[in-house]
Length: 207
Image (cartoon, rainbow, N blue to C red; front, side):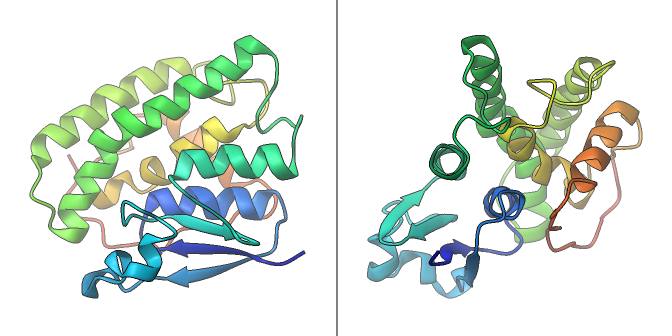
């Protein structure tokens, strides 16, 4: 099988989601780190792959796709259809979709945005992002009381979509200490075979 090309920023949680599922599925892949500081993500050749000029994007033997959650669905449907990663029964599939939406909304506006401020100097409201993070983590802490995974009895792409920015929330100044169920969930993902970590960054003062 030809390795799948993953265009990424190694410090992007969106990109790490895709690398996690590639690793967990045992798919051959190669990472292509874009020099985003110098506009590589806006180069005409890259815009043919990712029209909005964002990472991640993949090239699977000529088929190109951007958007991390869409890529998760594509890879599982193509290479692991019917597996526990994306259950087919309507209720569980809907639960997975719900957590993908939470990843694109609450996680993005919470721990992802807080980290964008501290790591990349994004002009966002850091205090608001931290507050949103804690609102989300309180809900997840309750949700994970007595259960191992977010959407099903086994790990799914819902867990993959949620992992990266939550695991690295301290890099955005968000403390995970008050959330033992959440931290246990992160540990379970990290204990999965073929887990690959995301590049760690400095942790500022936590809130």
